[in-house]
Amino acid sequence: MKPLFDAGTIAERVADLGRAITRDYRGKDLVIVPVLKGSYVFAADLVRHVELEVAIDFLGVRSYGNHQQSSGVVQISTDLSHSIEGKHVILVEDIVDTGLTISYLYDNLATRQPASLKIAALLHKPARTRVPVAIDYLGFTVDDVFIVGYGLDYAQKFRNLPYLAVVADEDL
Ligand code: IMP
Image: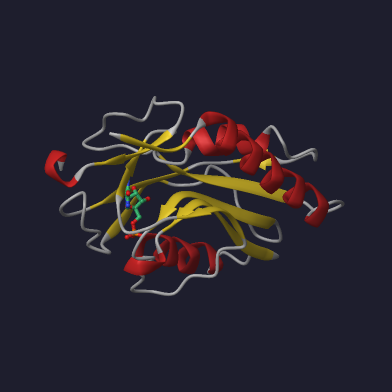
C-alpha cells in the first residue's frame, strides 16, 4: 500500500473546500448530502469547515457488479429524510471514477426541484470518465489507480486509514 496524500495534506485541502462553500452559500438555505458509505469521513471533516447554518442529510447507495468496475446500475438504499424542494443542495462523493454513480444521483435529485444542485468530490479519476461530470468542489485529481483510506474501501476494509493510499495491482 503506497501512501498518496497524508492526513495533513488532506486536512488543508478539505478546509479550503469548506471555506469556498461558506463563501458561496452565505444567506442561502443549504443542504449537504453525503453519499454513503465512501464519503462519510470526507463529509464529516468538510462540514466542520462550513461556517453556515447547514442541514445534513444522507443518501445510501448500493451499486451492483464488481467493486473495481462500476456497473452504472445504482440503487438508492436509503433515501433523504427531508424534501430538498427549493433548497440549495451539495452532493458529496468520495470519488468520481466513471461518473456513472454521481450522474445518476444528480439526475435523480434534480427531479426534486432543488433551488440549485452542485457536486463536491474528494477525488476525481479523469482517465476513466464515461459520463463527464462537472465537479464544483474537488479535492484532488488522481491517476487511474485504486485508492483506499479516508472513507474509501477495498472490499469494505481500509475506510479507517487516516490518509489516502494506492492499492498495488497485485493486491486487487
Ligand atoms: P463511478 O460510478 O465509476 O464514478 O464510481 C463511483 C464509486 O466507485 C465510488 O463512489 C466508489 O465507491 C467506487 N470507487 C471508484 N474508484 C474507487 C477507488 O479507487 N477506490 C475506492 N472506491 C472506488
